[in-house]
Figure 1 (tube, rainbow, N blue to C red):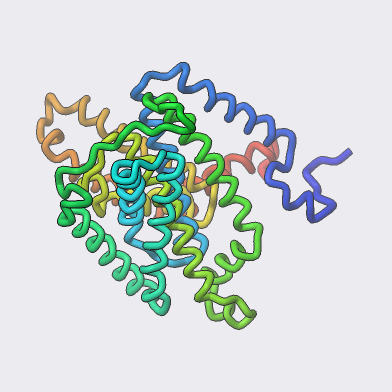
Figure 2 (figure 1 turned 60 degrees about the vertical axis):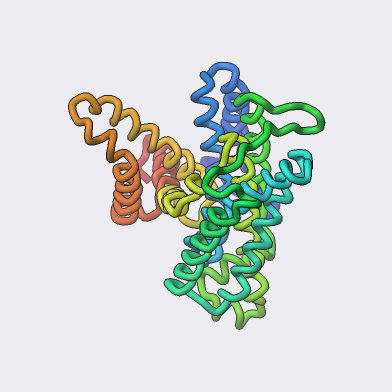
Length: 347
C-alpha cells in the first residue's frame, strides 16, 4: 500500500491537476464561483469583478517581472492603453465588444513592443526608470489629446454586447470576467511548460547563461513584454466596462504600485500566488474603508487623508512581506498544505 504520491512517468509529473483530491476541491471552487453572483449583493459582485480584473493584470506583470526578471513600472500605462483603445474602437468605429476587447489588448501589446525595443539593453534600475517615464508619457497623451481621449473629462463606456446579448449588469459582466480569468490562468500555467516559458525563466535566472546555451534573449524579452502588455490591455478593457467611465485619474502611478504589490505579496514567479496577491490587494482598500468608517466619527482626519492612508498601507504591506514572508502568500499556502499533508507528523 502506497503512503504518498508517486509519479512513474513524465506525463504524470506534467499534469496540472495531479490528484483526485485537487480535482475535487477545484470542482467545488468552480461551482462556488458559478453560484456566487446569484447569492451575493451587487456590491460584492462588483468587488469580485475587480478581483478578476486584478488577477488578469497581475498575471501579465508577473510574466514580465516574476518569470522573465524584467522590472516594469509602466504597467498602469498598458492597462490605460487597453482601456482607451477598446472603448474608442467601440465609440468611434462601432466595433462590437468581442472585437474591441482583443484589439485593445493588441494595441497594448504593440505599445509593449515599442517600449521593449529601445529598452533591450537596459537592466535593473535603468529599465525601471525607462518604463516609469513611459507611464507619464501615456498619461500626458491621455490628458492632452482632447480630440481623441476627451482629456480630463474622460469617456463614457457603452455597455458591452457579446453576439447580440447586452451585458448591462454586474452579474453578466461577472461571468464574462470569470471565463477570461480561467482562460488567462490556464494559458499562463501551460506557458511555463513550453519552450518559451522555460526560456523566460532561464533569462530571469541568468541571461548570460541563457544566451550561451542558445536562447535568443532579445526575441524572448520582446515576447515577454508583448505578452505582459496584452494581459494588461485585456484587464484595461474589462476595467473600462466595469466602471462604465474612464478618465486619467483611474490610471495613476498608484495603480502600478498596486500591481507590483499584488505580485510581491502573492509570490513572485508563481501563478497561484498571483491570484492570492490580486485578491488580497483588491480587498485591502475595502478593509481600509471599513476601518475609516468605524473611526471617522472620532478621527475625521481619516476621511480627508484616505488616499494617503491607502498608499501608505500598500507600502507597509510590501515592506512587511519582503522582510517576514519573502515568498508571499504562496509560501504561506505551501507551508499550510504541507502541514496538513504530513499531519499528524511534523515532517
